[in-house]
Length: 111
Length: 116
Image (cartoon, rainbow over all chains, first blue to last red; front, side):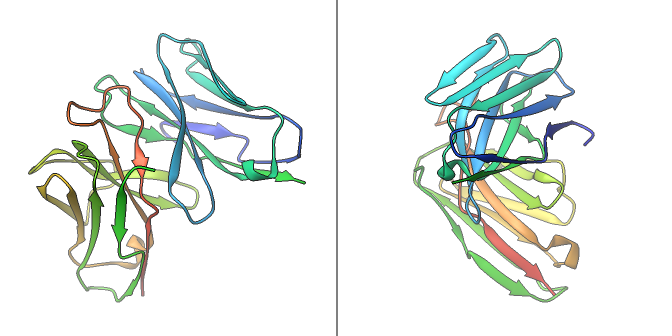
């Protein structure tokens, strides 16, 4: 992508394992967000990290942001079958009113 | 869940016909967005609105127009549909009534549009 990417594109793990996915972007950002999308549904917001923050937690989710490397990671700990979904990062620019989305990571958690 | 309704949920139409998709919100949010989602491209912004009658183009606006005559409704129109516009279309809202700065977007469940 011209603006950023996520890797891996797909991830398959066993229930109970951790899942890590990465996001890279190319512009200056105001904030970076992670979303989950279940099959056939809209995106659901998971977590937002501001450009002056380095790490944020929400339940089993941990997000890191390294603005010097223009990258972020999402860690899902102790994964469950219900975590099976596609995960997208999105970043907001200086104006903060538009988001640009990465291509997503498809996560399959096997019971 | 945020009160966002997209209609129709599914539509099949023919090349050259006009198509209008509707997004309705009950949250009084100022900002509304239309995206399309295609395999290999993630979500791409088509148009967005920052208030009644205030709209702007996104990344892939060619062939699309929008209108917002009321806070709660944001319409996306394909004036003359083409097969390349076959996609899943998502509406999103954000920001409350003071603007979206550093706020998440809330999505509808999408409209699956097929153009034959």
